[in-house]
Image 1 (cartoon, rainbow, N blue to C red):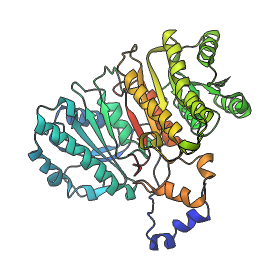
Image 2 (tube, rainbow, N blue to C red):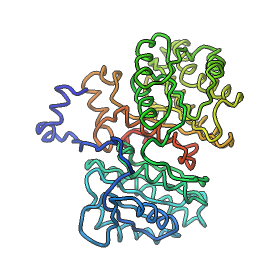
Image 3 (cartoon, rainbow, N blue to C red):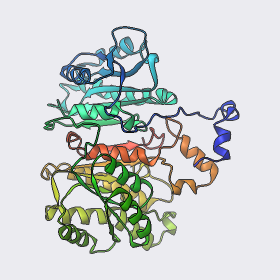
Image 4 (spheres, rainbow, N blue to C red):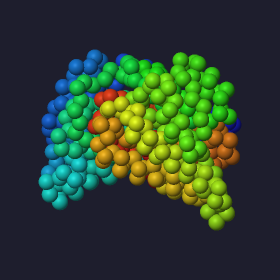
Length: 439
C-alpha cells in the first residue's frame, strides 16, 4: 500500500529532511521454534532466569553468550530479585556495554516482580523503575527494528512464564514493543510446539470476511484450528470464498440484532459445535464530532463494538458452549486507550471492552481466559484510503517508524488462543510498534 509519497519519504531526500526511517521487520513465517541465535542472560539470577536458561538450552541453534564480543539476538535482564532502588545501578553496570551488541531485529526482555507482590516500598519502586527503563530503551532500539518488553511476574509463576517469553522472543512479536505484560501463575502441562499449536481447536472469528479478521482466520487455520467465520450478509461473497479456501464454515449474521446471541448459540447447537476460541473482531466506526453526532451514530457503534460482544459471551457462557480452558480474545484499539477527536463513540466502545475484559478475567469461568489486543496503525483498505500526509504521519508515529500489517495482530490473537497461554488473563496487549500516543 505504498505510494510515491512513501517512496519519497523513504528515500535519501526523506533522510536528509529528517524523516524517521524504518528497519524492515523480520516477521514469522512458519518457524519450528521461537528463535535461534545468541542469548545473554544478565541481572540478578533467580529461579525465573534459571528456568528460562534450562528451557532455551533444550532448543536447537541457541547459544548462550560467555562474555564474547559476538552480536546478540536476545538479551534477558532478570530484575525479579532486585530488592531496593540502590540495586538499580545493575542496569547501567550490566547493560551499558552489551546493548550496543544487540543485532537488528533483536529482542530485549526484562523480567520484573509484580509491584503488588513487592516486599516493601523500596522494592516496589525498583520494580516500577524497570517499567520506565524498558519503555525508554524500546524507543532507542526501535530504529534498528529491535523490541524491548517487560514481563511482570506474579508470585508462583514458573512454567507459565515460558510460552510468554517465547512469544516475545519470536518473530511473531515483531510489531510489539515497549509493553508491560503481567504473567500470572497457571498450571501448564507442556509448552506447545510452534508448529500447529492450535491443532484440534475450534475457533469463531467475527468480522472475518476481510482485513484484520481475515488475517486472524487464516493464521488460526495455519496454526491448526478449524475456523468459523462470521460476518454480515452483505459480505457473503468474500466470507464464503475465504472459508472455502480455509476449509472453514461461514456464518452470515448481523451481530447488531437483539437476537444475534441466541442465533449464534442456536447455530452452534445445530452444528454440534463447542468453541475453544472466540475472537471478537467485528467493529465499525461512525466518526463525527460529538456535538454533531446523531443518536443513531452513537448507539450503532456501541451496539456492534460492545453490546453484541457482551450478549454473545453471556449466552455462550450460560449455555456452556465455550469449552473449559477456552480462550476469548477481544479487539480493542489504541484510539480506545488514548481517545481521538471525532471518535467519542468508537473510543468509548473500545475502552469499554478493556474494562469488560479485565473484569471477566477475575470471574474464574472454568479456566476460560479473557484478553484484549489494541492495534495501532495497521495497513488495511481503510488506512489506504486516508489522505497521503496523515497516512504517512500515522505510519511513522511509533518507535519502529512504520505501520503494522494485519498479520501482526493475527499472530498476537493466535498466541492468546494457545492452550499454554493460561498465564495471560485480563491482559491488554498493544500491537502498535509503541505508538507515541496512548502507549
